[in-house]
Amino acid sequence: MNAVKDDIAENLRRVAASLPETVRLVAVSKTKPMAYIEWAYEAGQRVFGENKALELRDKYQALPKDIQWHFIGHLQTNKIKYIAPFVSLIHSIDSLDLLEAVDKQAQKNKRVIPCLLQFHIAAEETKFGLDFAEAEALLQSARYAALQHVRIDGVMGMATFTDDAAQVSGEFARLKQYFELLKARYFATADHFKEVSMGMSDDYPLAVAAGSTLVRVGSKIFGPRVYV
Image (cartoon, rainbow, N blue to C red):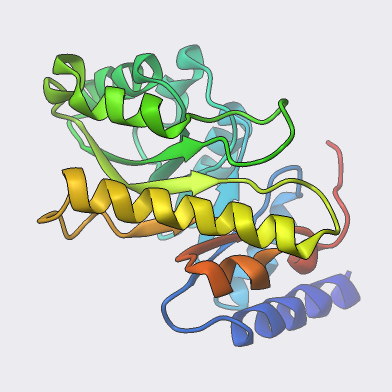
């Protein structure tokens, strides 16, 4: 186990050293044992990403309370209640219905939950996300204007899983363009609208080059997935 602990610490150091100061690292701990997260925490990591609400709730309850927990997966409305009391950022808002459901749970917990709008930028149809017209319709709607317990802090997207670096870079560039357009049209005076969540273990250097502010890195830190 000491070898795994040392590997995690070294992997974290290596990934962090490759990032500019403008980019924050989200250590993707989904499916990972509690011990792995504890070792990453001991190495100085404080931001972790999970994609299952119940798993996230259980880890939150067991682990240090100064961890910032990011929800990065497809969120079901009936599971929001499990993470609403504490989640630091939800990366995956892909509909107005979901945003309204988050607002409702945030109100119950007397807090405002920061969220990102997830865009579909990949060639794969299996990935979730809005297109740009849908995002504008959401932001222009009376339903959105009525929400008081959510805050849109930026955008998120996942590139196509491919070895074609040019394609991936193009998809990241499109997401950054969406961010800039939304910033200019809807959030010009909002300092909180500043996050571009893109880039994972296999492609985060391309995402950083395209303007990412949050990279979601799992296997490069923790090794291959552990299914639990």
